[in-house]
Length: 353
Image 1 (cartoon, rainbow, N blue to C red):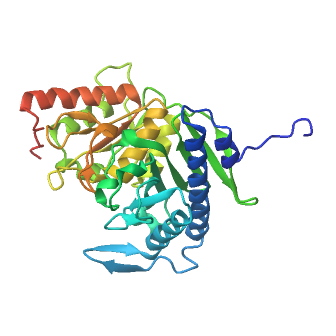
Image 2: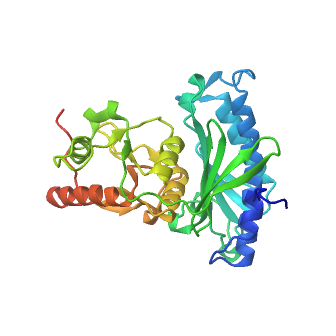
């Protein structure tokens, strides 16, 4: 190598030399699965960049909602990639009502994903993303027919997770249980190259991300907290600034790099929350914790704060309130929710706006 020449490390090379507590067999499986995910997201990235030209914006009705062509393409591309990966036996996706069974014999990994996060932003050319999680291998002796119960795993069963951010550049951020690392897609050579090792989320956040247009639907704790961080009473403490894209991946990515809070509370209309536990919250929570941040929710039974990754899913598309970001800010918000839950017996008072 010539003097001064930069040595680039591809995602696959990085994973092959990854230092982790997993066995060599497990790490080899993760590398193969991530290689298949890479193929899919490269295709999605290229299609996202040409969506307008390729007429991929047109919406079509599916049930009570709208699924755009690009959503469908992203979902099918990821399913196709996982189908070709012999280590994967079952999947769950935001775009598929039921689990996707590839091999009716437990003994492989479960892969979950939100194929195109932020798809409501497609028409206006804003940031999009893909979220993925790889849950630990199911032992073959479990036996029986593969069903929804094989999919409903706690976040503590994740062995790897990540997201892809389709923005000015296509960026992949992932963890396999030993730190969080960032890779950027070099379009010329078609490879994800390492650009940041061991991302560390700042302990305090200068910004917060929340949909403030729904503030009249929040609980009292969130209302008071947002008012407090915007206008702190101490003259020595700066107020936090609001930055909200509306794409979970984009808002979380900014928080991951610069410190921030991603807040998605329940509302009067949806007190159980809106963000999906299995394939959105768990993968993001795993990343956030590995980077030194924190993620918590409100337990659906008790109303008390609970670690996201310890919550047992009861259905594939279960929604929860979701809060993640810089650890010191998260600790303060969690303490406020805990105090309110104790006072109210687990039922957080709603705002009276």
